[in-house]
Length: 280
Image (cartoon, rainbow, N blue to C red; front, side, top):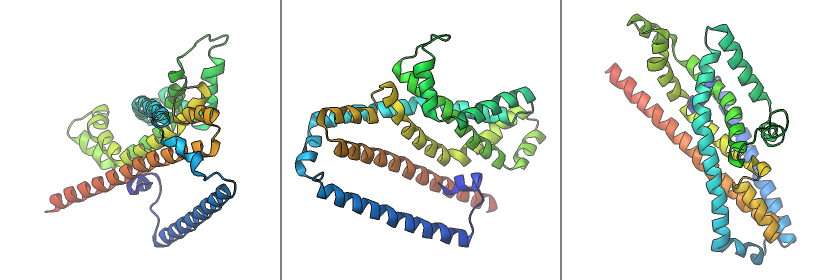
């Protein structure tokens, strides 16, 4: 998690805590490398590393097939994020609202969808809604994306709420002193600062959405995981196919995570330069 996200959501660790985190990270890395080494040895013993089992994945039609799945994954993730993040901000504001009924409704939404696994929500849209008494059917794409929106909006709402609470109370008081209403203070002063604080965390929430899109295989949506499943049925190369699919997911998540860290560092430098200008 990025530095600013850590400061917003948790207490920043001290020197001893940082040393403990570093030690645990090194031990975890060694354990992961050990598991990978054992796995590669077993694959080699059983002939899974033979060239003829990997060569088909260099064919243009195989690459295009997996590329179509990656495109479906990106589309589902992007559409879910476009709807989930603004909804999450509204839910956070509702939970902080002094209007009690609104706070109850938004709190119930957040707690329910934070607690339910997304797989169950997908099954509800796939199996329960089309039958009586609802008799509502959604296209395959939306049977995946709507559950992603519902669950992500609930979890991301807590990120926004933490960001809003992290903004210094003096900002709201200063806004009130120049005649801004509570709503105007939120819109022009508090929310922009809160978004800047949690922006790296939103990138990490995007990573979570990307991984949630793998449930598209449940509704037969052509995302990367589903395309991999179809490729296994055609080639019977289960290990090779899923290792390649896993590598693609790792690469995509790594790029998004690095972007979050870069964005956090850039925001810190900008904040430091702004503070220095004010001091001068």
